[in-house]
Image (cartoon, rainbow, N blue to C red):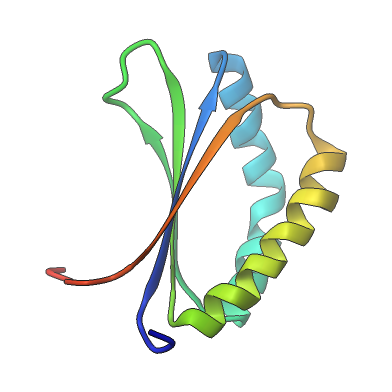
Amino acid sequence: MSDAVITSYTLVDFPTESDMTAFFVFVEQNYEKLATDLRDHGMIKFYITRVFNKEGKFTVGNWLEYKDQDAYLACDQIWKTFMTTVYAQNTSVTAKIAPHRGIVQYDYS
């Protein structure tokens, strides 16, 4: 498994559209450095999406891919540090976060 591509898909639900908008502002101000750090440690894809098929909901999806298990573990530490320092200290946005992790079984891209 250590050489398998690891995926992470996290759904982030916001109580209001203004909370989601505040999150996007935070992303624009803070994620470039985060993405650079993650790339340097084996992240190969990083998408932030607005989920549009949940009527009346304000949901964002984060899709990440890591080149292997070691890259995922290294990047997971970067995420933990980012969330407890940069995110916790620079935003008061309320959100429900639901992470999902997986190993790519088939790739038809």
